Amino acid sequence: MKTKIRTYLICLLAVLCTITLECMPVHAAKLPSLKVKGTQLVNAKGKTVRLKGVSTHGLSWYPEYVNQKAFTYMKKNWKINAVRLALYTSEYNGYCTGDAANRKALEQRIDKGVKYATKAGLYVIIDWHILSDGSPKTYEKEAVSFFKKMASKYRKHTNVIYEICNEPNGGTSWTDIKSYAKKVVKAIRSKDKKAVILIGTPNWSQDVDIAAQDPVKGYKNLMYTLHFYAGTHGEYLRQKAQAALDQGLPLFVSEFGISDASGNGALNQAEGSQWMKFLKKNKISAIGWSLSNKEESSALIQSSSKKTSGWKSKDLTPWGKWLVKQFK
Ligand code: IDC
Image (cartoon, rainbow, N blue to C red):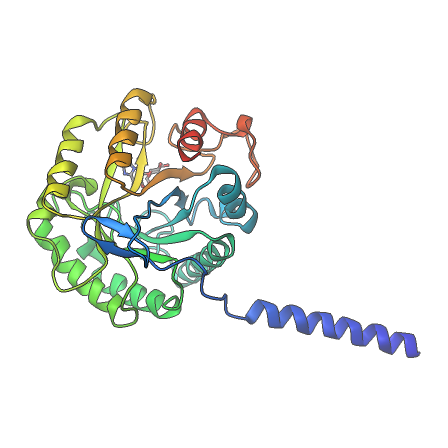
């Protein structure tokens, strides 16, 4: 009888411990908080920091890659220091098109993603992945309340970065993006005075030169996104980027690939190398698309591989191998 009671008490204690650990807030990352100085990202000592990492595919479609082992593995073996969590707003089961249960599931995935990134020692970008919705204005109200919620939840995390609109397209003007950005930045700043915020630019986040002529004023730690796919975008886009830098616009490449812009087609490694040189020279952070095994050339994992962490070279696509080599 005594042994039974003892066993019972030990079990109870174990359950209580597990519950306590699960409910405990994740401690703010030990990673230094980042600031924007001139065109660059810097740490508290003013030293330039370059973030390098990977983006998930849509969190509704490839959630299995958001796991602790994967994040810790990539930090240790691929030498990345950041991950991006792509939250599609539209499309199938997007945050703004799916039902309440779907929204809740997506928020839980973000929460896990932030937790795993924090534990792995990675910066983490919460990406409001607009795409088929064209203009960020389409779901502006939803974006304001989403980012308020996120900023209030993660304001103690020094490693969280907010990306407020992936790729405005369909002719969306900088005036519209800027008006949207002002509202969302204000919402974030009402909860978090310092976090770095990434703002999308017209024409699938390519027209950084246009944003540079009239950036958002009145706030610190804002950067502007430049996206490229080396199979489609080359020198002319680097010139746009250079023009923006020359005007003092801080750039962040929150998504890139070396396939064509559809995410498929042949890889252009030579053009990719030109881009890498440009990024290195200008100390620009860059995040590769995408951590998934979808059968397309912009996926990092072979579609035949079912591994969700601990990948060996044979699990990686040619793009995956190329990118990992760049990180190292
Ligand atoms: C692509 C995915 C593809 C998916 C499509 C639509 O790779 O599997 O079917 O989105 O959801 C972007 C976008 C990014 C695209 C990627 C490749 O930000 O969502 O992902 N791309 O087309 N901009 C330029 C290229």
